[in-house]
Image (tube, rainbow, N blue to C red; front, side, top):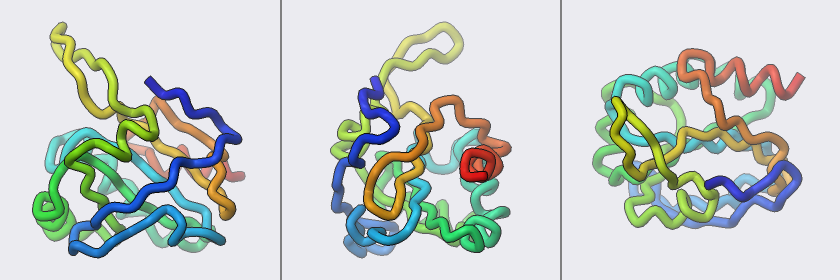
Length: 153
């Protein structure tokens, strides 16, 4: 369950991206970051969301935004996902769910009447000083970038 609120300091993290490079939240000081959590690489809804950010990536950059996706997939899985869909942004591997849990996006989900634990699709917009400006809990995977841009008008 998400316990973070808008205005809270975003939890610091350090983890590897799809290429094994170490990425930290502090690397984005001075920039506005779209930090989006998604359940799994190469699944239909997650692919729609990633491709929506890809297709609108330049307009996000033009607004001074950076994009990072996080799931519990491995670096290798992320690399394949990026290559398959030509994703221009970083994906962070969190197989131990440390970042996912720090942001409170590991929780109960339902699919076809079955209840299970998983990553709650959530987008955080983090300002230049590391504070959470917005939290999108009802992500529209087909229009994820438009949801972000609408909040920043």
